[in-house]
Image (cartoon, rainbow, N blue to C red):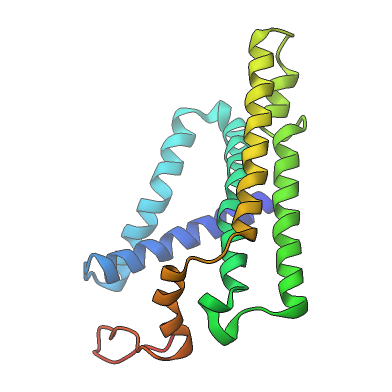
Length: 194
């Protein structure tokens, strides 16, 4: 069920993204039904091709992709929490108090679980590789790479949380959140409320 839900979520997200990119950024105006068919084909075709050519390794590929996504999640989630809790960026809408504590705790838990799954057997990466290797120089190198990556992973997340928000980035976005600037007009020429 989880795999089906993840696949549906991914397909729907990719489809909507494709529709917005075609319509908004590329200004490709197609009838609604053709746009829907085209964006869905673009989203689904790579999956069908991969499953047709290597059907016996799909489970291994799914495990690898899930492990890769778990590694990448904190690189997107931690800055999102940081900017969401930053008064410099969000102005009066920044998360405060208990909400801020919950968000940072959640970001730490997400990082910790993902860092742990990198190194345990069955997690899809270093733990599996280390377990399947005989004692050798290559295994020592793998452990060195694993420790180096884990230290970088920890440093990056701590640096992201503890560093100050760049004042130039804050100045670009504060006007939007405090209402000093108006957003660009939409296709009808009217301002859009964000």
